[in-house]
Every structure is written in C-alpha cells, then in structure tokens.
Image (tube, rainbow, N blue to C red; front, top):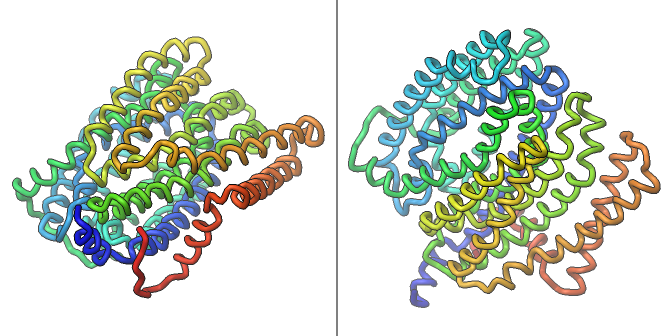
Length: 510
C-alpha cells in the first residue's frame, strides 16, 4: 500500500482510536454491570436449588446454545465486516433470522421428551420436558429482533448497546429473584428468561429507527454467506471447544456433575468472558475499518494486548489463590467438590482473554481459514485427552484437559498473528512480562499471608487478602513500568483521556 493510500485511510477514520476507546468503556461498563449482576443472580440460584435442578437448567441452556450455534448464519458478522452501505442487506438478514427462530423453536419443542430422558432422574423427567419446551419459545421471540441494532456495533455506538444489555440484565435479575421466591421452583428462572427475551426484542425497536420488513433476496444472502460461512464453521468448532466438555460431563458423569462443572466454569471464567467479549465487540468493528492499513492494525493489536494482559493476568492469579475461600464463604457445602476444577479453569480464563485479542484481528482481515485450522487442532487434542483425564479425576480432570489444550495451542496462534501484522514475537511477548511478574509477586505474598496471618477462612481474611493482593499488584506494575518504560501508564492515561474526548478533530493513532 502506498503512502497516499495510508493517508487516505487515516483521513477517513482519523478519530477511530478515541471513538473505539470511548465506545469500549461503554461496553466495559455494560459488561461489568452485567457480570456483577449475573454473579449475584448465580450466587442466589446456587444457594436456592439442589444439584438436580441446577443440572436441568444447565442442560436446557446448553441445548439452546448448541441449536443456535449449529444454525448460525454469520450474517451479522458479515454486515459488520462489510465495507460501505449495508442497508440493502438488512431485510434479507432479518427474514433469515425469523426463519431460523421458527425452525429452532419447533426443533427444541418436539425434541424435549427425548432430551429429558438423557441422564436425568426419572422423577425429574416431566419437569425437564416442560422446561425444554418453555425455553424453546425464546428462539421464537429472538428471531424477530430488529436487525437495525447491527448499526450499534458497526458505527461504534456502544452507548446503545449498554442501554440494551442493561435493560435486559436488570429485568432478568429482578424477575429471576422475585419469581423464584414466588414460585419456589426453577420455573421462576424460566419465566424470567421469557419476559427478558420479550423486553430485549422490543428494546431493539425502541433504540433503532430502522424498521425491517419480510423480504429475502437469494443473491444478497449468498453474498453474506461467503463471509458468514467461515463464521459459521468457526462458531461450530468454537462451541464444541467451549461446550463439548459440558456435554461430555453430562453424558459421562450425570447432571449433578454437570451443575458443579458449569458453575465452576462460570465463576472462574466470568472475568475472562467479560474481557474477551469487550475485546471482540469493540475491536472487531474498529479493526474492520482499518483492515487495509497494516501499521495502524499492528499498533492497535499491541495496545489492546497490553491493556488486556494488565487486567486478565492478575484476575486469573486471584481466582486460583482465593477461589477456594470464595467457595467456602459464599456457596453451600454441596458445591465444594467444584474447587479443584475452578482453580484449573482459572488458567483457561487467562488464555481465553489473551486469545481473545487474536480472534478479532483474523476476522477483520478475513483470515478465517487459519482460525478453523487452529480450532480444529484444539478440538482434536481435546478429544484425545478428555476421556482418560475425566475418568481418572472427574470434573477436575475435564478442567485439566481443557487447560492443556488452551496452553498448547496458544503459541501457534500467536505466531500466526505476528506474521499477519508483520510483528516480531518479542514485541508480542513484552506486554505480558510485567503483568506476569507483578502477578507472581502478588501470589507469593498472598500465599505467605494465608499460611501465616489469615489462617482461618472468614470474610475479613478474604476481603483483606483481596485488597492487599490488588495493592501489591498495582504497586509492582507501577515500579516496573517506571524502571523499564513499557508505556503502561501512558496507555492508561491515554485511555482515560479518550473517555473524556467529545468530538474534537484529531489525527488519531489507531
């Protein structure tokens, strides 16, 4: 690409970095609120229901996830990635979504009696059938979601995404707790999901002025599918990697073990899921706008990696160290067997958040075939390890198998993205060094205190250890950044400045 072309791209999107950061903090605020409220909801549900009921809820959610994944068109990702005006494609994508919703509703509704007999206690089968069928209605409702909401991400209008997710989340939290207390059964959770789905769908029409109509053009669908098919294939493999272990635990160990494993994964990966979802939601549309400008793409990738490592590395360390104390303090005794799995899955959360920086770059540049190869390699490795490890160590063995596949397949993906953005491996490793060193120091001091001062598990020792650990980490990062000048403080200041930025013209650096 010539220098003139580079200048033209920068003129086209001169303020992209600040828009992305500003939008990113809307997403971060949204995700943080969602995760915090979801965390409270999960604690309430875990303490309210027995393992069989938790297992049935998990099984119903998993069936919705797998049906959604295996019918994913990838049209929305294609619309975000597509250059130019997408208005003429919206009605086709919306019509396809409605058809998909109807098909999924009918599939889950009529498959419910068969699914309810799979490793579910006989006395719980009628309850499971009813729950599967009630959950299928969510497909029908979500199929009518306004496709115009795609502009929220494409145009980096993340304040609307924040409003949409907050309305849905608050509705779900309030109704879940209220209806569970009213019904005194898991039907309260299901009723809350149905009402939330209705409100979420309605909100997309309130926040977006676009009004879709039933109209389907095969030519436009085929064009979207050319990109979307790789998203579809990647989503299938990703889902098998993300949830294949859940299905294996369900089929091999039963729904009680499934409940323990799912909640261990949820509590250990909640921060990682938060970080990764923010990265994907913000960086993918931003990267798509500069996909032809390699220097800006490389600079953006390294900045995102640095800020991600700064938060995700200490989070994983803290979950590993303080996870057992958290379980003993906040969860009932029947959940204690999840502790070893929770600690191992903290490693999974770390690699997930760091790997989440790579995915949007590959998607934005259209390099989706290598993604399938990497994911296929992870899936093959998982298929080899999961049975013997689970047989020997139960859900902890399952967690160990997942952790090993993540750790072993992360370096090849890192090398590939280095070649893609024309960056040395050392420049990619550098952003990880200070967070790793500071987290190691934090872990060492925290372990010493746990065995010398905070020898008994209680709320004071838990929160005291947490606050002290964070203080040690931040102090160590500040000192090391001052000595080695890795520009961590500069990037943090730059981000906070961008939050306050309004609409001033700027040359930009993204």
